[in-house]
Length: 80
Image (cartoon, rainbow, N blue to C red; front, side):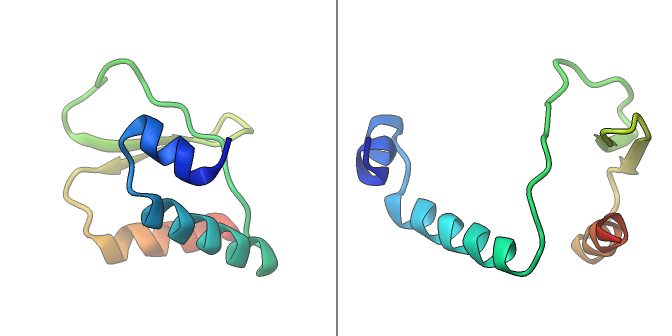
């Protein structure tokens, strides 16, 4: 199935999909990769914005009041 057909079938913007594909290809070239993400069925605590569970079982809870720069800094730490 083509990317355009996939986007049309799901009501997505095909330009956005092409943009994400390009970003992923560039990140692969830079040594960065993807991480598996699973979404919880329910919120455990309202004070937690995002819970990241690493493959080794370490659980990191990010508060709801973090701004984009704090999340970006956190992601940089995870890359090392």
